[in-house]
Length: 407
Image (cartoon, rainbow, N blue to C red; front, side, top):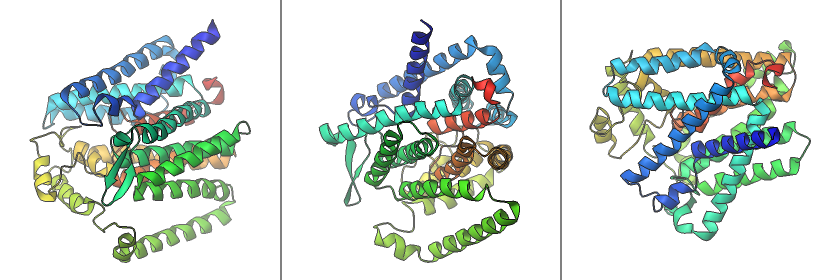
């Protein structure tokens, strides 16, 4: 009976992860992502289901959850700043509603950290993303009108997701998880490598240049972190300095040659409108730099965002940069709270790798790298109903638990 209950709990967890990641219900129930009011109601009901599940499962083991909750204060302070922003928000009702959604999302991350070890969490994510990958291929084969779209003269896949960039972003994360597990497990490694290869293929088929670059960087980063961070300080510091210098030089060269490089792959240096969007967003940040416009309020219709939309002449749902969106929502106060917590955990992850030379401690550093990369051209920071933010919460909390606390 106990084994059956554990299996049911894992199945429910897997279902919730799928809801946060993106389900095949999206294209099937919305006629190929043509959204209507009723469709949004269905999505809200699904996410409400995950909030109820999280709260119920947390209640069953409240003592351990209380302990895990106390391991990192900056995550919850950030949530508190979001709640307080309702007092100065452009639309307090929207802010309150979205803070509730964010709290429900973070509760699920808290549940993962308190219930499963870090490796168990990643295995559950691998199962879910493996199922998602199979569904993407099946959709392309059976109902291509929903999963394959034309994109600037080329054909791009979006699979079971609303947009090709979301497909690319999702399977960069998938590749990171499969690669990590393949490098740290001895059992079923061929399955894990197959998942990694399938993730890379889907990133290629998404035709998302940013996702392809992130896929390569994440793979290389894992290998570099493991090899370099175990070296003695006298060797490590010069190598890190050399790599940082090389990285800055390469980035400077890339910017100077952007017209030639991006033009050769059919792109332009506006990064699909982002270089026009970001200056307009910075102008709006300058108007309320300290506290922002309130969590989730700026991009509401008929709000301050209309000035940005008039400038860029395209209907953008966000700033396409997580750090700018965080600044818009919570001002410099929120940005500083996030950066302090992030840097502390970044330095701590390096310390853990050097102190305890196991692959498991690499995940936090690898995932923090992914968070930086994924928020340079998209927004996943402090986002409600976001798989990326759930894993951010669970990775930080899990890294601060002694092994016996996860058993």
